[in-house]
Image (cartoon, rainbow, N blue to C red; front, side, top):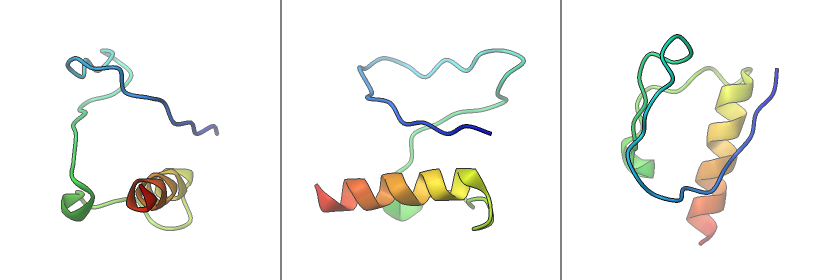
Length: 55
């Protein structure tokens, strides 16, 4: 399992068919339900939230 972050250059989100069902942008204080703390996805989300809150 891998996780990574990337810089957003602009434009619309276009999910790759067959890879991801849906994608969207969310404000930190209005995130949808996130995965359980044991998951890599949770850790990636928490890391990103922490970085953005320090800006």
